[in-house]
Structures are given as structure tokens and as C-alpha cells.
Image (cartoon, rainbow, N blue to C red; front, side):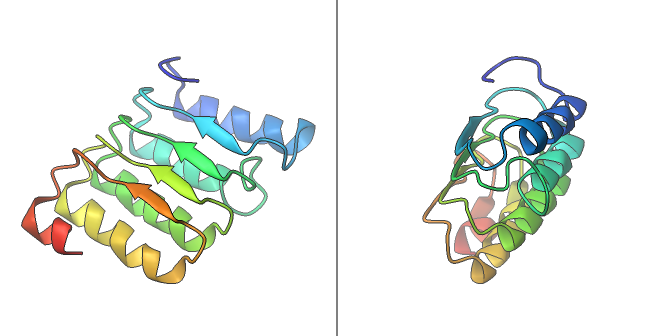
Length: 130
């Protein structure tokens, strides 16, 4: 779903559909360049945790979706709760030092994620240290 103008509502609908029609079969999802924003990040988190249709995802690309710091907080919650993701691309989401820091903290409680990309998030020295 790369560059398909998917909205936060679209992510919610996708999650509901996957949960009903195809639970556990989709293991990779590309939502690159959809401008989801913080509300979309919350929907992605919901989709990838609990009863969401994406709870079996192993690879998730949400690069370039304008999450900002609040979206970084949502992604951190997802990282803390999700046990199936092994690869997550959060590049170019404007997380800033605060968003990168909360994501880094979430990694302490996640043993499944083996690849995390945070390039071009204006992390600065503080975020890079975490």
C-alpha cells in the first residue's frame, strides 16, 4: 500500500478486515509514504497488538508517514506489546529526539525485533545516544 493515500481510518478498516478475513496470514505490510500522522500511528499500533488483524506481522514498513513525537510514542507502545515483528522501518517520520528516545526505551521490553530503522528522524545527539 505504498503511496496509496491510506488514512488512519483506512488503517483501522484494514485491521478489521485482516482480523475477519485473513487472521495471521499477512506477515509483511508496506505503508510507506501515506502521511498517516500521529492518529495513523495509533491505528497501526492497535492493528499490531491485541486483536488487531496485523498482530502476526513480521515485517512492517511505515516509513515517511509524518508520525511526529506523538506517533513515536504510539510506535513505542506497539514495540512494547508486539511479539511478532522482527523488522520495523520508522525512517523519515519526524520523531525527533523525544520520539526516538521512547522507541529506544521500548526496545528493552521487546526480544523479537531484530531490525529497526530510524534514519532521518532528526534524533540529534540525545536520541542517537539512546
